[in-house]
Image (cartoon, rainbow, N blue to C red; front, side, top):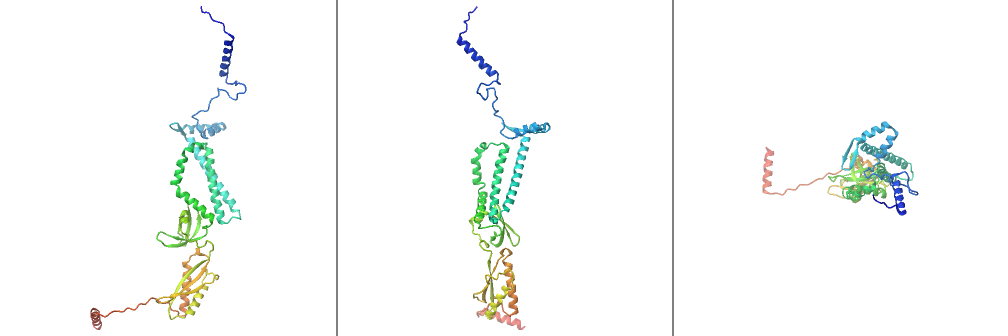
Amino acid sequence: MTATAPPTPSDETSTATNGADAGTLSTPDAPATGQAWTMAETAPDQETEIIASEGIRDGIASQSKAAGSVVDTLDAWALSIGDMRVSLFDILLVIGVIALVITGAMLAIRLCKNLLGRVTRFDSTQRLLAEKLSTMAVWGLAFFIGIDLLGIDLTALAFFGGAFGLAIGFGLQKTFGNLISGILLLMDKSIKPGDVISVTDQAGNESFGQIRKIGIRAISVITRDQTEYLIPNENLMINQVVNWSYSSRDVRVKAPVGVSYGSDMKLVEKLLYQAVDETDRILSAPRPRVNIMGFGDNSVDFEIRFWIQDPEEGLANIRSDVYKRVWELFDENDVEIPFPQRDLHLRSSKQMDRLIEVMSAKNSV
């Protein structure tokens, strides 16, 4: 028989305290006074996916049991790679969110263009610049909205910031360079839709074209033969460009004409002025000009200078029309257009004399 000492008051107090603590732990529904949560509440699961598919799945299941069963079936078809699990429902959800965001962005861009088209204070260049900036803003906003709808934490993408910056610096350098160049061209209004510029192909042949569109990457230029050139915006910033309609649409065209030395110079000048006045598309102001440019080997060289206001309609055709009228007037007034003539002088020699004798003998026979 073992004697047991009676409990002391301090032991009773300790036992009561332990009992109270045990009671607290065993009854999770009785939090202590002033305590907002208890130890019995489950902590968030560390393996829970940070994506909006779980909340959407639960929401669909709560609204309809049939839809919930379909969602569960789609979610059951999954591929697990390590700790990552991707189900068919997740893939369809991502595709749906992307399609929704792209559709909304396109509608917003169209709405912005309609609103900007009603602004009468903007000219064509300012309106185009505003459309480009609003398009960039809408697509940037759409990107962040899509990230938020998918439940992707942007802090998780911070690791890829450096790699993304390198990709922009190396892989997308030309793309961003053309984008910035296009915005600068629209801001300083040096090149705008409708302008007529000189275009040189790879063979070095120069032709004239009208700017149809200024895009994000390149401008579209259409020539008279309906050939469309796509010129990167950056090339227009670093290379010399001839803009025929930058400050004025008036363009001066030159047409050289040669007449023989025996012609009446006053009559020739009168006929050249008449030819210009009777040709369409030529402006009466500034006044056309006929100049004598020099005395050539075979002709007196004149040059007709006249102005047109529609260079996009072509320069060669208007010069051809003037030449046709000049030819008709010269033919009516017996003005001669010379052609090159050469006098051949042969030095005498024994071989040459022998050749002449042989040829003369053959002709006499």
